[in-house]
Amino acid sequence: MNGGMFEPNNFPKGLYIENFKILNKTDTLSGKGNFYLHPNGIFYLSKNNEAEIVETKAFRNNPEIKYATQSGPVLLIDGEINRIFKKDSKNVNIRNGVGILKNGNIVFIMSKTEVNFYNFASVFKESGCVKALYLDGFVSRTYCPEQKWIQKDGDFGVMIGVTESKK
Image 1 (cartoon, rainbow, N blue to C red):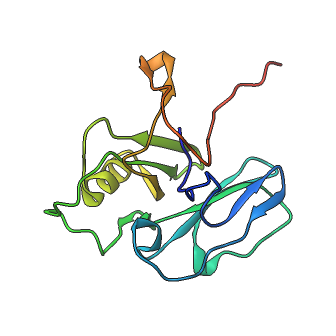
Image 2 (image 1 turned 120 degrees about the horizontal axis):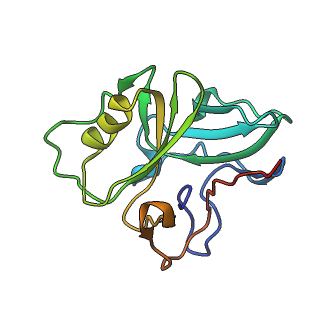
Image 3 (image 1 turned 90 degrees about the vertical axis):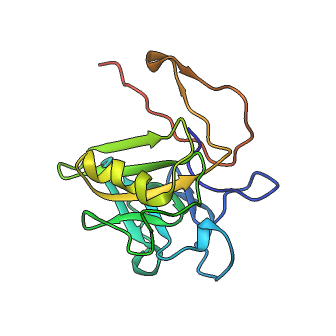
């Protein structure tokens, strides 16, 4: 699935780390659009594949970070839905995001129909996530043949893939 927002040239918006290399710096500016809704956040994996979601203002770069993508807004903070979201919001769209369960496992969720931020965050909370970050909206695509979800169209800047290693 696409793993964050991107600029018109398909370059990632905000922080992007790939294989321990910083390819784009953290965006701490103010602006319009979902990326700048507060709080904005960063999802990352450490060299030990431990996942974390932190608010951008609390993020400290670390050479142990293997992959990172910045997006916004943060959906769940300490297991609670972001207070800026309203249950009856008419701001609906296809949405995708990432969450972290209490045991540290990662959950990726993409809506198949339009949903507001409150209801989207609720799905992560009901799934047992303690943290969650919105990744992208109407351009979101997922390729998951096991679930009969095969979207091969689209134009992206950051992709997240789940792989298995053969032992």
